[in-house]
Image (cartoon, rainbow, N blue to C red; front, side):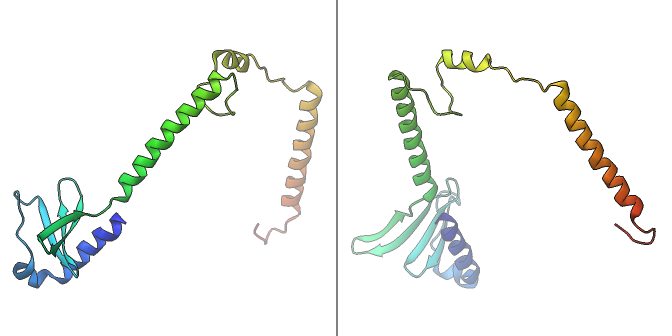
Length: 154
C-alpha cells in the first residue's frame, strides 16, 4: 500500500512539474513536507518520517488525514502474536507439557537428557560395504571414460 502511494506521489510529481509552481502548496518547516496534487486533493509526504497524508478540502476547511501504513499494522500483529506465543509456552511449561521440537525454553531436565544422547558409529563391516560400493562406482566411471571414442566429447 505504501509503495503504491509513493509511486503515485512520484508519478504525479513527474507529470505536474511544469504546473507545480502554480498549483502545489508551499513547503513548511524548512522543506519537511512535500506536496503533490492528486485528483482528490493533495498528497503530503513528511520527509523526516516517511508518513503520507491525503489533504482535501472539506466543509470545515482543508484537512489532512494520514494514509494507513501497512508496515505499522504488520508490526502490531507480529508483536501481538509474539506475546500470545510466549503466554502459550508459559502455560504449557506450567502444566508440565513438553514444548514441540525446535522450540526454545525447554525445561532444564529435557536439555540435559538431549545432551546425553550418543550417535552410534558404523561398524567396520558397514564401512567395508560402503567402500566397496564406492570402488565399484569408480571403476564403472573409469570404464565409461575409457570406452568413449577419442573424438567424442563428454
